[in-house]
Each structure stands twice: as structure tokens, then as C-alpha cells.
Image 1 (spheres, helix red, strand yellow):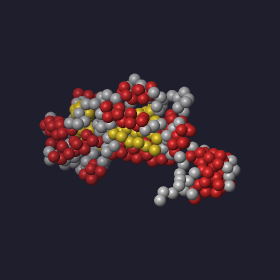
Image 2 (cartoon, helix red, strand yellow; image 1 turned 180 degrees about the vertical axis):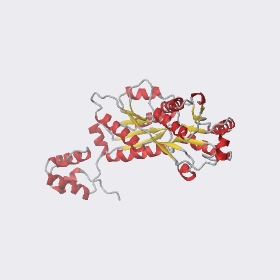
Image 3 (cartoon, rainbow, N blue to C red; image 1 turned 45 degrees about the vertical axis):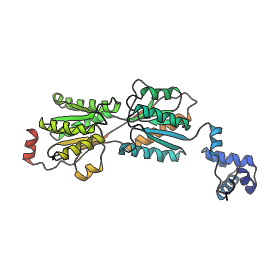
Image 4 (cartoon, rainbow, N blue to C red; image 1 turned 30 degrees about the vertical axis):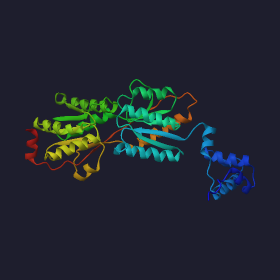
Length: 351
């Protein structure tokens, strides 16, 4: 038998106060305001009665009253990617503290899917959107901004726009991770990257070029660009590079690094004795096999918290004139202890 839903009238009757007073206290609590302004003892009694009766507020009515659903959308490129999964976890945890619900989606680097997710989320009544732009989605993202839905870009930027964003200093990261290999004595260093025209990828490639040029190795610069759905070709790239005497690789992403490591092992080579590698973000595989000479540690928690805070600020100030904010996070370079290199292995590298 279904029990009748508890109403504010039931609370008012048991607490011995007016319905209007109960409504004020409960709405103040729901909106994050101080419900004790009326009278501390009375407010506490009302809240205690509500808790005892297991009162569940009418969220639909609250939405009509405030014009907000306290729901946001987050679209990343791939939620199964550890980098994005960890950021999503941070966003969800912080959103909960602000009494927001989060809807998640993955674009899979497909602009059509990203645009569809935006439409689905908008139909759900989201108050704002955090999105990792993918190639070809600039127009869809700009339309969102023009329609005054608060939006924050994550990890990547959209060219020629003035949207709030939280990104890594990828140019600096690319340069520093390259220099970490150069400090180990490697000079024939090539980069494996994506063919996608994404801001973060382009900046990492530029950083690699800068790092090589500053060490007087500009003539050795070579960037191999792969489609994100054609990673099997990385095997051919690495075999060819080894035949040409390449000593080390900089991988533009963690996914590329894992595919590259698989290819290296499949060909019977060791890291870093036969070929060295540097990449973005760590991975359990690297930790187990002690393979990465160096990697860029990205501030995951700051990515999530800064993006969520920027979005909530934009939502709360939506009726006011707001300016966009670009937050650039500083990368940290983590280097492993240099292994005891056998002389014959070093000579083989230079052949």
C-alpha cells in the first residue's frame, strides 16, 4: 500500500507553526540560505519535524521558482580514458558539495555526437556545460555561448572565441618533457602525435620543437601524426624510426604512449635500454615496468575544481555582465632515476 507523501502542511501541523513559515525555512535550506533568520529555535524545530517525517522537497516546484535545475552537463572526449575519468570524478564530488547533479557524456572525438549530447543535455534543462572540444565542433560550441548557456572549456580551447577555459600550459609541458630526454643524453628524439587539429596537441608539438631547437637539435625534429582511430600504425612508425637510429620518443598523449609501449615490447625492445620514451600522465603499466623516463604530471584535481567553480560562478551571475576567465595550469615534470646503462646498449643506440 502506497503511503501518502508528506507535505509542508503536515510539518506545519506537527511543529505548530504556519505553512508559510515552514515553506520559508525549507526553501531557504534548499537554496543554501540561512533558515534560522526567522528564529533559531523555531527553525530547528521545523527542520527536526521535517527530518522525522522524512519530508522530500518538491524539486519541480523549486525549479519553477528559481528557473534553475541545479543540473550541469559534462562532455569529455572519452570517459573511459583515465585522465578524463579522474577529472569527471573531481567535478562530480565538488558539484555534490554545491548541490548540483552532473550528467556525463563522451564525444568520442565525433563533432556530430558532441552536438547531439549538447541538445540532449539542454532538453534535460541543464544550467551550464563543461565541455572538452573536439575537432569540427567549434560552431556548435559557439552557438551554445551565443544562446547564453554558461559554458566552460576543459583541456582544450576553441580558436577566435572568448570563452572561459581551464587548460594546461601545454607548450611549456612539451618543451620541458623534451628537455628531460635531452638531459639524459638523447639527441635523436622524435614525437608521435595525433593528426587532429586540437589546441592542446598543437601546443605540445610546438613545445617539442622549442625544446629541440633550444638544445641545438632543430635539425632532428620530426613529428609523426596519427589518426586517433588508426593507432595500429604506430608499430610501423616505431620500427622505421629504430632503423634510422632514433633513440627516444615523446608521446603527445597517454593513449599514444600505451600504444607505443605495446609496439616496443612487441618488437622485443626494452625501455629505456633500447629506446627511451617520455609522455603525458603516468599509468600503472609504466609503474610496473619502470618504462617511462619522464612524464608530465597534470594537476587533475585543479582541472576539475577550477572548471566547476568557473561554471557555477557563471550560472549564478548569468543575469549580470560577466567576463570570461582563462586558467592556465602549470605542468610538473616527473623523471625516473636513470638506470645503469650497459656500454654495449648505449653503443647500439647510436648505431
